[in-house]
Image (cartoon, rainbow, N blue to C red; front, side, top):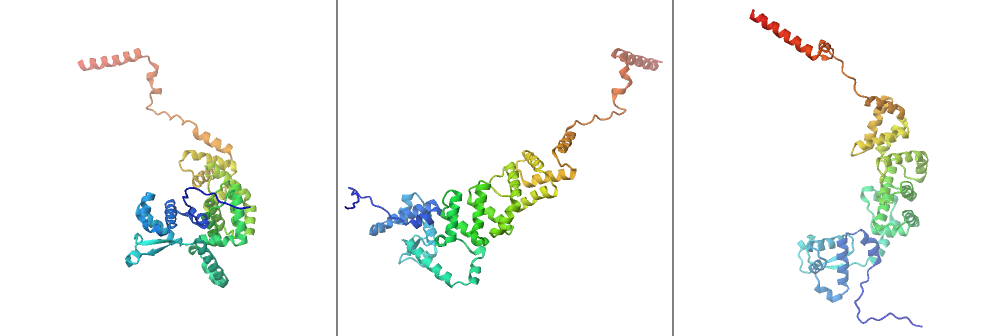
Length: 369
């Protein structure tokens, strides 16, 4: 028994690439920056031969400008994926110039980098008290990183959450989507169950499979103080039928890809609770949006407010009111100047001509005398 690898007459070589780069860094990077990294990494595998290549060679081979190449290296340096090794004769001004090409590129071992970062997070977590954590949790100061994803995978609760979200979305979340989820949890101080419920609501109730859309749902729930599963459950039980009404109204208006804002929900509640309009009347008002190029909840609110003031509460009353408006205008009253009632209507044309000629002859006779 033996194991063999097929030998080939010409070895074109291979370029091994770390999975961490593919899984965490590549999906969120601009396409040209990925090409710069990959071709530069390919050159780095050549050892001493790599010295004959320059940033300009890279630009020529990728059909990019030298500025594009240097911007790509700046991008990867900010993420600790590469390090710049400045030439011994490079001036201090070159170090401060983001478009100076006077450096070599050293590719970081991403496996080693993440092992070190995870070890650092563990040590920091053990030494961090509650006051330090609250300071870290300020919404404006936290942005998730690929390292946070690695840490989340080691957290049983978060690992289970991401597995559930993949099932709900019927696909695997990409790293930038995972980072967005972690930011929601940190920014809004949410329980993972709240995030799961938001994904369920978006996918099953609204039939929208968009992580950005889920973010909108969570922001609305945040505005209403729904941060734990108990308060959310009470809210959904109370608002379940109302949300179905919101959905029906939004679909009638052609709004299929978003949730109502708090202000829009407040107006719709006014129609249902204060004005006590039926859904039949509300949807009838929505049908009038064909008269405007930009339908909105405020436009419908204007229609329903007018109906409320005029006492129109059902379709029958509305139909009567619209019919009265569509009747033709009454014929204006005749005045003393109208010819319809003049004495001329009692004579024929010949008789009128004789009368006119007789008057003329009498005037002529008087003038001659």
